[in-house]
Amino acid sequence: MTLSPAFLDELRARTTLSAIIAPAVKLTKAGREYKACCPFHSEKTPSFTVNDEKGFYHCFGCGAHGDAIRFLTDQRGMPFMDAVKELAAKAGMEVPAPDPRAQERAEKSAGLTDVMAAAQAWFVEQLAGTEGSAARDYLAKRGIDGATAARFGIGFAPDSRGRLKTALAHFGEDALVESGMLIRPEEQAKDAYDRFRGRLMIPIRDVRGRVIAFGGRILGPGEPKYLNSPDTPLFDKGRTLYNIDRAGPASRKAGRLVVVEGYMDVIALDRAGMAEAVAPNGTALTERQLMRLWRLDPQPVLCFDGDAAGQKAAIRAALRALPHLAPDRTLRFIALPAGQDPDDLLRERGAEAVKAALEATEPLVERLWRHEAESEALATPEARAGLKARLMEHSGAIADPNVRQLYRDEFLRRFDALVRPQRATFAPRPQWKKDRAGKWQPPAAPASDVARAIGSGGIDAPTARALVEGFVLFPQALHDHLEALAHLPLGDRPSAALRDRLVEAALAGAELDRDGLATILALGEAPLAGPPAMGFSFTRRDSDPARAVSDLAAAVEIVAAAQEVETALAAATERLKINVTDDAYAEQQRLMAARSRLHSRLASLAGNE
Image 1 (cartoon, rainbow, N blue to C red):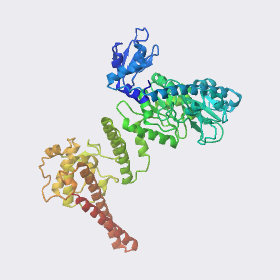
Image 2 (image 1 turned 45 degrees about the horizontal axis):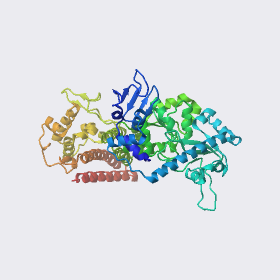
Image 3 (image 1 turned 180 degrees about the vertical axis):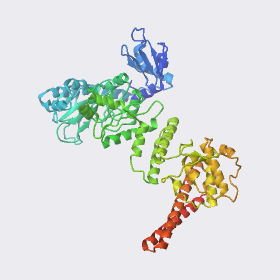
Image 4 (image 1 turned 90 degrees about the vertical axis):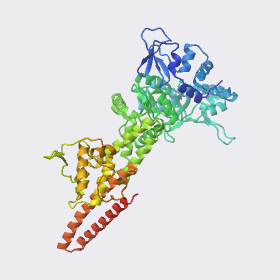
């Protein structure tokens, strides 16, 4: 009976490995793992570890390694299907009924593995022959010696349409076509021919080390540069990772798993003493490949090329990973020098440079932030709004609620620091001074401050009352506008007095929520006496807080700009009195139009019910 990989993966995911092993071995908790004396060999010091998160056990003494199924078959001597049935019963899963077609496919797949093993051996023979000289020269140029080529099983496919077909004819043409080694034309009159011709052949293995596909690199001119096997009963390129058979054990020893873009990058890292590298098979990382990575390492390192295509691939992987992030599941990134891949870096600067790069990893949140913040200039409100929208979309894609909230908070913190680098804090800063009465006085407004634009003529009483009332009802806005509020020239005395107390309370470190602030300021339901305030959203207690804070910020900016225009208009009018010119008149008219537009904007904002 044959079981699908999807069923077995689900069974492993639902199985708590320590619960399966505990009846046979005394486990001791050690951080996020369990330790014990190995059940597969005699020892006094524990070297056997069990990791529930990754779903495997490993003995550093004898090398025993496996999952729950392997433990039952190796330690308890159970047949494979009996082990599966026992685990499925505990996990509440039904073992699929025997499927004759599945059995047939399994037998066919077993035959195809023999085809692929024979093909790989034949390619190795051709590499060593006279026709393989160009391929051997290419390997030497890439710094790949004979031992490395043998370790990865590299071979050579002669530039012929039928040499492999003839060499493996005993398997039958149908098996060779189904394995992907031959191409059968649609026209029945034409013969099947070798898929790989004139290429360096790199075998792709499954986790058990069996050859299931090939990647062929062309040696002369032509396209594509790399040709991969098609999907077959053995090979699913969206699920398979190149070098997974060697990188799995190596990653446990190294404490990390590295993902690179291509076969040669994997081989280059191996030459540098880092065998814990894998690569997708000529495609972007898929969700299924990410899941396989996370089973080996909760935070694999993506080391993609330093060119534009490599960086785009890194971002695609980051976005694909977002929905699946969890407290124990993320990605890390490495930024290589522009235009370089790991192989380039190794050849130009040596293994130490590669190892240093692998140590300087960048977390996923940083990589996404940097990508979005650098994607376009943020000179306009629209561009900044676009950045914020993209960041919120990214955080919203995360399924885990805790990780989602923390990503949102981190993105907003970075966004605020970027667009408001001069934002005031609540703690009194050195430039704030107390007067003789012990009252905090703000510094003179700097030229760049919004408050600098507010003229000395003062703000009309209704507007002043509305602004101050807005800060009382929505004190969270003080975080952004404390100094601007302190500089407002308020002609309305009650408004000015309340403003001063509000600033004093904020600088004293008061709790800035609405009810707490109202108690400190001894306010009732109506913060200010006098006629009802203008109809801004921030003067209504029941307004949506986000909208009210946004409108309050807009109103402060409009008032500041209006005062600036008034000051400039007064100066332009004086110049016009002295010397009547077309330019002076045009400047006065421009400023008058600007004042009219600002008044209209403020009136429109006040009409937001």
